[in-house]
Length: 159
Image (tube, rainbow, N blue to C red):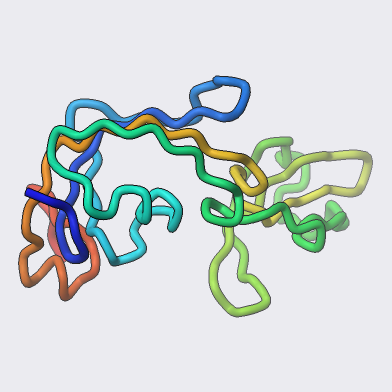
């Protein structure tokens, strides 16, 4: 079956950066998404449109079509006392915060120095060129419920 909007696509993939380091992967048909529902990054969704079961593709996605460019205004230095348990703040720690638009964003601690903490609201893969090797395992029609909910329902999924 050929892939198009409102199809459920099951893929195996390996994601690497430009240095060949594996950033993420999914095997054994564990990853499925609803084509056309913005469940995956735009560049990959576009690259997979009209592909068929059994096809393999390699595609390089620029940051603007992945997780976006790095935005310097998303990096801030804040006082340590903004954290309830200041003695436990460590580099790499992540937490949710509310962005200027009211949506939740993931914040990553990038530096802890004396009484100041540098936090970064950019996605960890912002500014990174993403290199995917993808095998299309299965393409099937989305159920009415999947289309209504905007995502794939796997076994055991419950709302």
